[in-house]
Length: 211
Image (cartoon, rainbow, N blue to C red; front, side):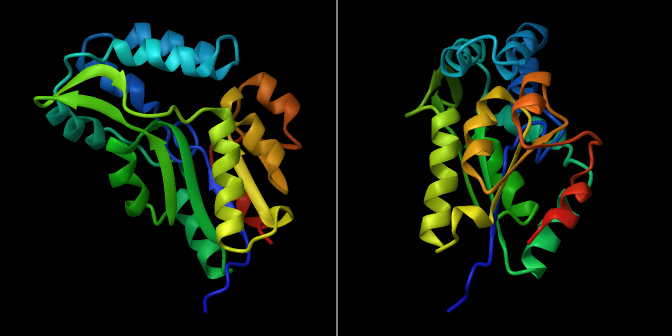
């Protein structure tokens, strides 16, 4: 039986990758700036995340599902992410990603980067185009913390041997639940609330902190 020594859980947008995926999809609808402003407010914690996400997803109505290929081509992995994932695996750990973004993109990006488990929102589509609705329950701050706890329990990893990494206000509960919570290139409120803040946009900075 393979024993998982520890668990590292990352946010996706602006943490695992440098992009905000919803903004890339919004570009396909010609609504990039409008959605970007709303995303920034949500990440700063100025508005309710779930309410904001539903509003932003409405702006995606009519975008063809086929456009996801163009979105994927624009994804930029965060510097150091492959090195971090490799270091976690070399030391017997597991990497999870829990995102307020979307499975439609993460289902390609996560395995490419070596991520072991992931969870995100799903976009509803009909006849090959987005309806402007989220399909199912929204992955919010509570869901992020719950995912970390569930993966830790499933793999018999004590919470003290978990690390959570994120940049937005919706990551704070996950950061608080972990044995070590890290604000990564984060919004000011997140930096202030997290036990540890890392400034450079390089996930290699996390490697020396691994158990």
